Image (cartoon, rainbow, N blue to C red; front, side):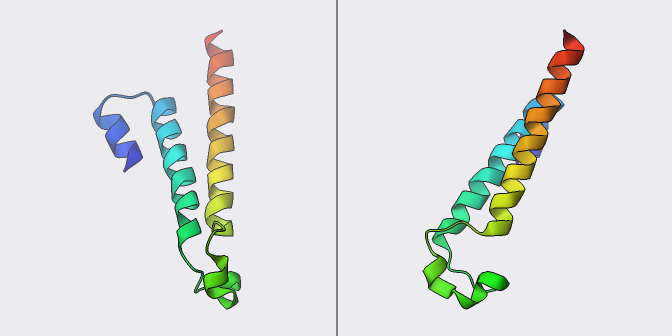
Length: 79
């Protein structure tokens, strides 16, 4: 959704990717409110409330790092 909105307003690819990365990170943080019921954390259940889902958190880190590297590379090309 973040990408679609960004492109509707003619944002650059880098700005759209930044919005997407923020949405992924926010989504990962949102899992803190949900008790685990599947995967390895499923055995923990409601005790997982307050901790983000590990996979969602990891995806947020990866996408954020991709954005930072893309931004750095684009800035070097422009200079």
